[in-house]
Length: 371
Image 1 (cartoon, rainbow, N blue to C red):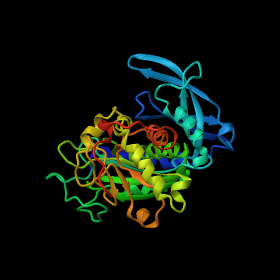
Image 2 (spheres, rainbow, N blue to C red; image 1 turned 90 degrees about the horizontal axis):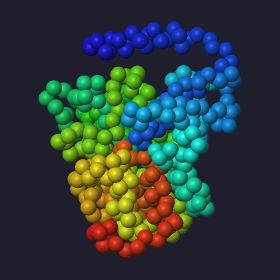
Image 3 (cartoon, one colour; image 1 turned 45 degrees about the vertical axis):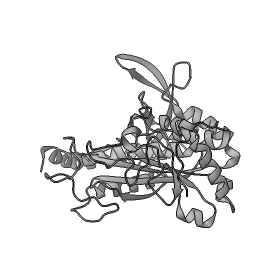
Image 4 (cartoon, rainbow, N blue to C red; image 1 turned 90 degrees about the vertical axis):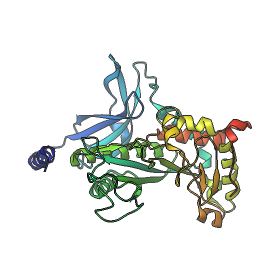
C-alpha cells in the first residue's frame, strides 16, 4: 500500500470523530463556481445561522478572482441549491454565477446569457440530457488501476477486475448525486478500463447546465476521498484512439409529440449549416480538443464534415433507432467534448434549431450521410 493510500485511510478514520460532533442549528453552505478559465470549479464554505429554505435565503458573497498574477474581487450569486452529500443535512451545496464589481457577469459566466436564451424559447419546452464521459488517473499521472504492461482489453460496459477499474468511485458518485438532488439518470463503464460515464437529465432549460456542473463538482469531491483524479480531457491518453465526449440529447414539445420526426429532421438540417460554428463552442479550447477527438473512429464522426444517420454512432448527429420507429422523440448531438461548457452547448443548439435561420454555407454543410 502506498504512503498516499495509508494517509488517506488514516484521514478518513480521524474525520469520523469530527463529523459526529453536534453543531447546533448552524448550517454549512458550500458555494461552488466556475473559474476564470471556464473549465475548472472552485468552492468555499460559509456558516449560516439556520438552514435555508430556498435559494433566496442564501446571501451573495465576495471572493478573490485571479487572472494570471492579477487579482480582483468578484461577487458570487447563488442560482441553484442542492443537499450536501459530504457533510449531510442540513448542509447545502449552492451553484453560483460570478459577477464583477459592477454586478456584470464575468466573461467565463456563460450561464447568464444562456438563461436569457432559454427564457426566449420557453414555449418550446426544450429538454436536454447530457452523457458525461471521464477518465480516472492516479496522482502519478498514470491511468488508474492499469497494470504495468499497459492498456487492458477494451470493452464498453465491461464487467470484471481485468477489464474495469474504479467502479466503486462511479457507484459512490451516483449515490452522492442522488442524495444531493442532481438529476443523474444512469452510469456505465466506457471503452478504456478506467473510463466511465454518467448521464444527467432530462432537464428543462437552464436546469441542465446547473445539474451537470454540480455533478462534475461532486465527482471531483468523491475522487478526493479515493485519492484519484477525474479527467475530462477530450483525448485522455495520448496515442490511444479512445476519446471522451459529453453527448447531448435534445428535444422540444413538438419533437416529442406524434409526428415529431419532421421537427427533428428540420433541426438537424439547420445544424448541418452551422457545423464549424458549433465545433468552436463544443469544447473548452475553441475547437482544438475536438480536432483531436473527432477522428472518424467507430464511435466518433469526422471533425471536418457534418454527418447524420439513424442508429449509427459514427456521425455528428444521431437519430436513435427507436425514435425513427416511433416517429417522435429526440436527437443526439455527439460532437460536444467531455470538457465542454454545457451552457454554451445548450445555447448553440437552441439558437440554431429554434431561433435563427442559418444561411446555406458549403464549408459548413460538408457531406450529410443518408439515413
